[in-house]
Amino acid sequence: MTYNPQIHHRRSIRLKGYDYSKKGFYFITMCVQKRKNLFGKFDSVGAALGGCPNMMLNDAGIMVERWYRELENKYPDKQCHQMIIMPNHIHYIIENLNVGIQIDQMDGMDGMDAHVGAPPHGRPLIKHQTNINDNDSKNEKYGFQNIKYNATIGDLVDWFKTMTTNEYIRGVKQFDWPRFDGKLWQRNYYEHIIRSTGELNRIANYIINNPAKWHNDKFRN
Image 1 (cartoon, helix red, strand yellow):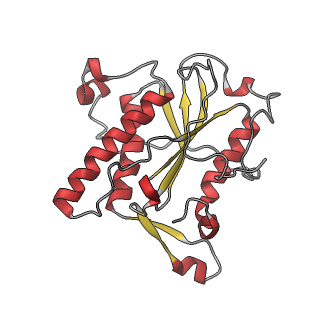
Image 2: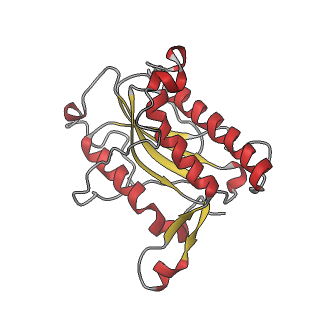
């Protein structure tokens, strides 16, 4: 089953009774309020040459990317994997390192709730480094009481929304970034529990190839 934004979109489709602090991989999609293109645009040069259009992040998009990398500092038991920032939405995979099954124990569960694309042709998952100064410890940056362990995925998303919204507001005031209506992000978001290594690879591949599909992306405004 392929990823269909008309079905799998901004709503948070949560499993009743599921523990979202549980170890595992989660696919998250967040969309800008009213789908405004606030994070950059596509360079048409690549497409004109028959290749993939390049996503050109503006300062706001770079800011969102920076806060994504910062999640690992705020939540040391979380790990950031593939991510793509599009003009008006973001896709990313978060790994919760807490408890539960290991990724190599997920084989045999393939096909359960799978909904993303073709295999990634051997592309590995990439762990990105945060942009925080290497000399800063997590405790020095946030303080012992503000480092969060055992947080749910919803807690992580809420913090990410808050941090990016606050900095975007500063960008509006100081650098004349385009204004947003009421809230930067739509209230709800889409989440998907990844249940197998095959599904993990398919979703990672979907994220990597997302820019090539912008011309018919359902999120495109």
